[in-house]
Length: 201
Image (spheres, rainbow, N blue to C red):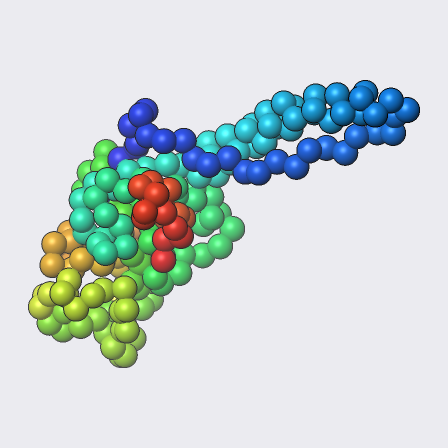
């Protein structure tokens, strides 16, 4: 499950800025003043662009729970890309954020395992996709379980999602395939804590 971050969370790093070039001037001191005077404008411009990207392209969220261990931990802060699926299709293996089907006031974060039209079955924890056993390097052996799911063809407009920590995850094995219309973002990168920072894979 995920939630919006608290107001006290650290701000995202700002991009480096490059000072604008100065125009020719006869007085070297005037040139120095002109260059230094451009720094506040450049910094403000950079801050405005960063704010635009964060507010309109990315959304900060906080992970609640441990169903995506070991890649995402409880209370990790991450940015999700809210617009990526307007330009590209959902792929198997994507870590997505969606409205919990039984209760749209809650949001979940899981990994996409199967897409519309895929034939899926789970035999004592082993996932078979279109007749082949799925290699799931993102699920450590200690997090696997022995649950089984009868063969199913994923309906049009839906996908099958599961947590990486199979022992404790509530996912499509419990509430069924998720309508793609409920998916509103792709996990992009963790920004806090610093030790966990990095691209979500």
